[in-house]
Image (cartoon, rainbow, N blue to C red; front, top):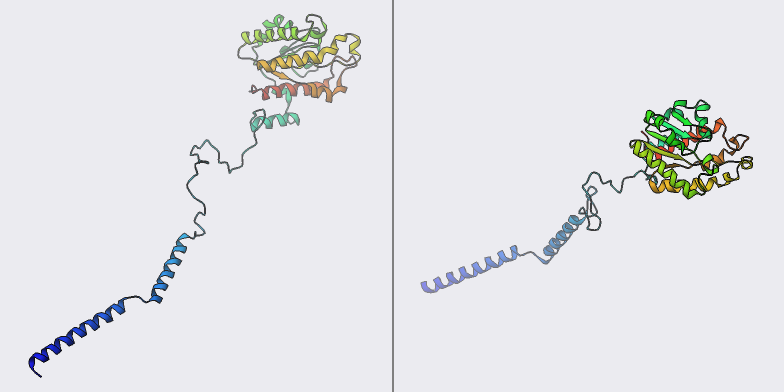
Length: 288
């Protein structure tokens, strides 16, 4: 064998060996189908794990939706928190509690009268006559009507009251000054306007007219018209924003507490009348 032939054989053998090594390396580095399947399975499981929430992670979107914005204003209550039911009269919890205590007779109702004057007829006289309130705060008189308010103006101004209670009506209906409720209401509202002008810081409270009962109608059949006059006064007061105290419920509940004359009321009635007057101020937002 010549030297030239030997060199060719050695060169060819080297090339074959190099090719063989390359093939072996390619096969070693290329993953098998099984390995590729395993890798795909691991990747799939990892993707599921990333999507599965943990016990401490929220399961709902944390971003507020456009239809239900979350307010950052501290004055806006959280709709998920329990809220106190609203009162149809707009009363606070404290006011409702005070009214409840008054109705349950847990407070001395007479101690709640301060800076006041009571104006009225013979039935209002009972507030001082039965020693419930001081006489100097009760400018009342038998036979009085709303026209006596002007006659008592000096005494009213001297007291400079915060609350002015008008407890008229019995004589107003029967005396004949006013032929119908409309005429009476017109003068009543003028009386209130005059009081507001003279005492702008005072609050006027109008009591509904207590009814008359048999045998009072033997003295005046006009007292049958008391409910119509009282209702007209109440409607006018509500329209004008004046506090009107409706006594119809207690008049019905304590109908047996009228005196034998069917006109005046017994002492037992006055605390309930007083309760209504004070509650009227509270509900009107004027009690201090």
